[in-house]
Image 1: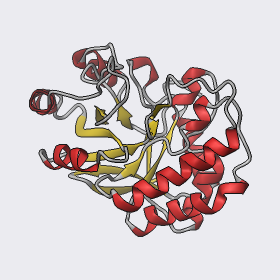
Image 2: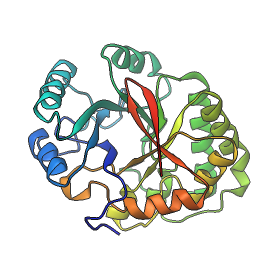
Image 3: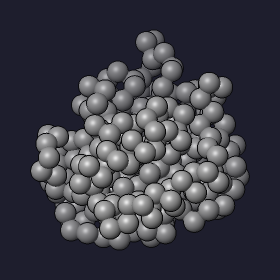
Image 4: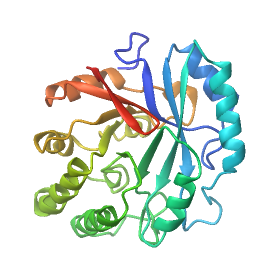
Length: 269
């Protein structure tokens, strides 16, 4: 479902031309969001310290980013509330670099995402001959090990991102324990999950995270839930959000969150 009768008037994972993989200008992205009636937009452009592809360094002129977003926040006041965020790629060995950037400015929300498995760039990796279950177990163990140490984020972005790329929805039961332990870290640390709908634009039709992870986070006491399209162009804002809301309700979620100054505000679903 992607019609004009949206249940939610917010999108909490979006990109602009400040991200190396977004080719749409800030002005066009923000004008598109306002034209669609979005009332709260979190701009969460990419910062991935240590990203292994030299053609995509995924860094930002942070002074210009802040200046531009603050100017647009003023420009759209009364029309759309712009939240200034970052999507930070979490990588082993890069925690200090991430901390320095995150702490340098007063962001509204930090998405902590995994785009790599150590030095493997998941986007360009050839999964043709990979042992899927072994790689998934390695990925979730790596995620757990990183999140035990790195805490400077608010919401984990597209938790089961590997499902988008690996080519098959494998049974998660064999490594359910490490996923459980990771979700417990989130709950105990007051960290959120997002329902990321980006896989639908790629035709994979996979919720990120998959339904079983969303259910387990809720069973473990998790309540901080955001909705993000991961839009890199205006037509993907709030993509499949109505379906995502119905999924969340079916799993027992009563609220969704909007972040301001890195604190969640809860609204009924």
